[in-house]
Image 1: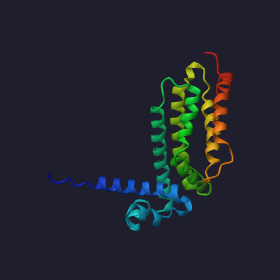
Image 2: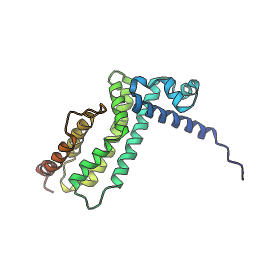
Image 3: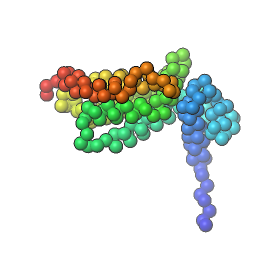
Image 4: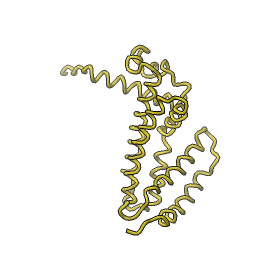
Length: 204
């Protein structure tokens, strides 16, 4: 067999960073912010604490990079959901289902952990806000594909949908407990969304 090509330093660096960010992501999902220490992340990633500190000198640096990593994960989930849409599906139901799927995965759990931590951490807050704005711009573009503004659809509609589903997803954050009847709320919202959107639709 031919000898395997040796990895470059850049490749090794990228792989280590990726392993550390994946480990941070998994730790936030499984144990939350409190349990996500640099020691825990290094252990999960299979690297020394010194190696972690070489890439991310502080926990704030690590979590700021993790915020970007979460954005990429959420983006992947959202794009996959878009690709899975039935072209003949009802646009209103599709928009609700699409965003609900984006809010039902582990990336949402990580986002909750990070946004709560960012409330009292200005450095993390700055990083989180920046990547969340990028994510929301992507969502806006995808929403516009379903409800084109040139057809008179108000783009604030996406924010209405997102706000309700975001709160609904948050209501079931504690495992085994939720304070809203999720399926009933979703079905009701799907029924009234066309009325809400059409009532604010502009003539074009």
